[in-house]
Image (cartoon, rainbow, N blue to C red; front, top):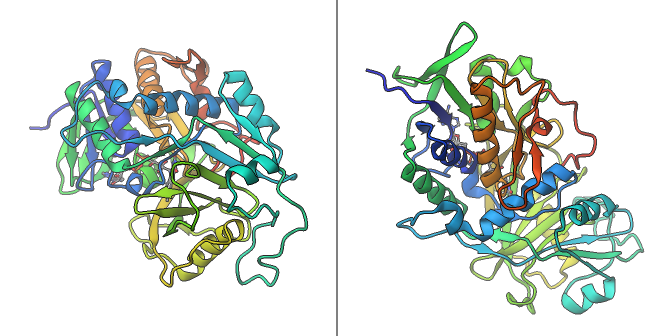
Length: 435
Ligand SMILES: Cc1cc2nc3c(=O)[nH]c(=O)nc-3n(C[C@H](O)[C@H](O)[C@H](O)COP(=O)(O)OP(=O)(O)OC[C@H]3O[C@@H](n4cnc5c(N)ncnc54)[C@H](O)[C@@H]3O)c2cc1C
């Protein structure tokens, strides 16, 4: 006999688990299905878990700020104990280094509008606070094979913006386990090592899913929270062709190097974003620095056709590109003899802004296209989807009358229509992992 749920959520990453938590709080019986063996074992396990509010749109900034406030009071958000303990938010602050070419005015205006604190650092302040940084400008970022790699443009950086409300989560998989436990405490069910192979529908409405092996589970609502597999699930549901904005999987590498001499984890451990060299870094356990890329134009983009089949090994070439670029900014950065890092997939939309929306198939919803920048927004993505689903199931036509969600802490009203599958490509986006 098949068991029936109010809603099946495909995926138990930070997004799927958060949706379960919020739906369960609203009295929905939910089942998360994940083909992996534990919550957060998909792309969330390899996230850099950076928490920041610097998005290119007001909506993105508001959502990130509200989510940041949830991370800051994580146990209060969850309202339960997890036998494994809580993931920890290291609130180190978030620092954007910028040169003259980078217009920071929109980001700063968004922060002013929302009352989010920030400090503008001159180049002298930057030098005083981070004396190990080389403050020459190098734009545009290059690959080490470029004959002009390492040449300064002749200018200095213009300065930096410091956002005290930022940092990173120490253990992203544990954070998802926390959400799983919180959702279970409200009645949610999680099932692992089970792969959804079909999405069943009748007369334009969802009836349930079928697992590989043939087992059928019924539900009038199915949510696609499948991360980089989102396009596979959308195709399975037959709805991909009816959306203006699409998703696809992008391979991405993150590397680890030892922290440089003089790096003091109490004073210098800010998460650092640096357009001038096309990268970012943050402290990592074991006196390491984690080195990421902002996908500068010179780097080839590795779109992946099959998210179950991609190269999970760090490539020497990309490792050199990311690590050597950071060494331009931190000349004392130790360069180890061996490449070390992790490889995973972003689930990228056409404008690098996610899709949190219904679909043209009744009862089928999406929380997809997280574009390398939505781990931090898990708490609010959960709430947005829960409110969207509840409103639509009660008859609201979200496409013509978009659902509005009031942020519980800041009181800002988020227009869920901003994340529509049928929006025009948002020209205000950074079109990058910065969102
Ligand atoms: C290298 C890297 C660095 C990043 N850094 C940051 C950062 O610093 N800050 C930030 O905010 N964001 C960051 N991100 C983005 C962030 O990690 C993602 O936006 C977020 O983790 C996505 O969560 P998810 O739940 O949607 O996806 P996932 O965690 O991938 O979960 C989806 C789940 O769906 C399951 N699934 C898929 N298909 C099926 C199926 N057919 N049947 C059953 N289960 C299925 C998968 O097994 C998987 O567990 C980064 C991402 C990467 C890859």
